[in-house]
Each structure stands twice: as C-alpha cells, then as structure tokens.
Length: 387
Image (cartoon, rainbow, N blue to C red; front, side):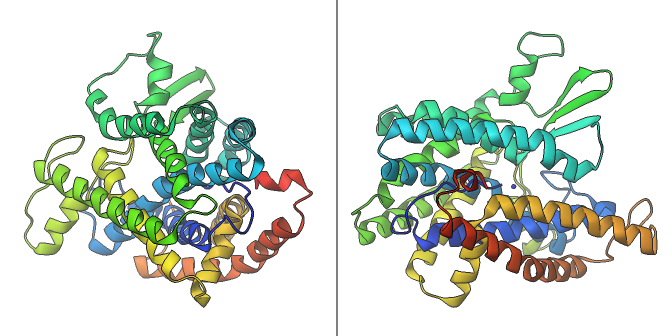
C-alpha cells in the first residue's frame, strides 16, 4: 500500500491529513507482517470465506483502506503544494518528477526488498508503481477545470467495472497497455524476466483526480465548518453507494450470500475486490477515509494523533525501512529456528501477527520521528521532498 508525501506549509498541511496517512501506514505494516510471517496461510482477494477465519479476514480487510487513502491524499496534497508554490505548472512539474521517481523506486529498491533477488526474475508492479503512474497522469489532468476533473474521477471510479469483460490475448497490440490499465496479469519481458501488474491503473487515476479536486476544501482561507460538513456528507454518500451496489449483488463483484451466522454474512458482504478495485471497494474505503479525516480534524491536539502524524509525515521513508526490516527479520528467524510452517517460517496465529506489528511500530517510531523532523528542519534539501 505507499505513500506519497508532497511538501506544503504547516498552515496548509492540516494535522488530520498526516494523521490519517499515519493510521493507514500502521494498517499497511500489519498487512505486511501478515504477508511475511503468515505465508503458510495466504489469502486471495476476494477471500475464501469458507477457509478464512474472522481474525485473519478482518486483519486483511483493514489493509483495504491503505491504497485508496494513500492515493486520495496524494491528490489532496498535490493541490496544497500547488497552492503554496504558485499554480498548476509547479504542481504538474513536481508530480511528473515524483511519479518517475516512484516508478524507478518500485522497479529497484522496493522489488528487491520483497524478493532479495538480483538480477530479478520477477518484478511485481504494486502500489508504488500505481501511485507513480497516477501522479504522471495527474500532472496532465491538473489543467482540467475542477468540474471536468471531478467528472473524470467519478467516471473512472464508477465506470471501470463496465470493462471487466474486455480482455486481450498475449501477442495482441493491446495486451500490454490493457494489462497495465485494467487487467491484472503477467507480462513476459524476456526468457528470464516477468512483470506482474498487481495494481491495474485505471481506477487509481480516478481516485487521485478526486483527491486533487477535494483539495479545494482545504485551501487557504477555507471555512472549517463547511469542510467538515462536506467530509461528512461525501463520506456518508460514498458508504451509501457501497450499500446500494452490494445490495444489488452484482456490479463488479461476486455475489454475497447469507451465511450460517450474522458474522459470516457480514464477512461475505465485505468480501470485495481490490485488484482492480471495484466500485464497492472504493466506495467503502474512500467513504471511511473521509469520515476518519473528519474525526481526526475534530480531534487535533490529541497525543495519539500526534503519534500518527509522525508516521504520516515520512511515509516513503517508513515504507522502505519497514520492508527491509521485515525481510531481514524473516531471514534471521529462518536461520535461527528453521522452517516451522511447512515451507515457511511463521506464527501460529493472528495474535502473533498483531503483537509483532505493535512491537515493530514502536521500534520504527524513533528513526521515523528523526527523519520527519529532518524534513521539517531542512527544507533547503530538495531531495528530501521525494521521501
């Protein structure tokens, strides 16, 4: 799930934005601990309700918030950066350079952190790739009028599922671009290298466009009461869209079913598609994200909120740091204790995953706090903007 953190003045970067980003960073950490130390119990998306216990299901479901919130806040932060720097030309140039930087980062340091393989035989094009390409797209879209940007964002978020039945075979001229835009799949680069398009791009462009359009709510001199009312109304409206779409039991999703218990029924309803994110997925996660943004704005000054803003103030640094720490911990555990879960080393239960995540969050706080303070103190170092 990562993490673009665009610079803006303290007066414009409301605490709620960094706090929300920090919260989903911790959800991301939990999910990546799961992917590292629970490989013997991998889950699909949507998940198999019959074989996935509730603790595993809801731990994974929490992570659904990460990518939509990160990418929405990337668009929002881009608007604030443009307001500070003097217009669309400045924000467009920064988005373009930052987007290219993230794409290169995904292909190199991020992929190596997952595989520890060089040269790689597989490159997974995941969330950093999706954020980078979305930023490239937004660098051009910022020139649209706000109404046009909103219309395009809604069209991509709500309409991309109409394209679910469209596929192009390998060898077709459209196979590669369509695999990047909408079809999750494999791209054969050579005999020794394959690419996995884990995050189809099209709906994420819609999310970043809507985030940029929402930046007007946070503009200099904006009315806090009006902003909070809009966050509430749009958040509840998005959740209503989720309810209507799931009640229809069709569009973009497998049908849900009544289970043997109310909990199983709830799990079935919440069992939604992330790759690519369905309308139901984005309506639920963005709706919750807007309501959390509202709640955090109303709670500014809380001690726990200040802790979250530290994680949210240096998201790319945290992202890279936690990936390498997790990989080294896994290799160390494997070397010391050997394999204890078939072909993998891992915990026996989700409780271990949660405890490990809490310990890692505490251990990583000091270096992240140091780096966030460095960014705030050394605004003259332009390269820090990219981390």
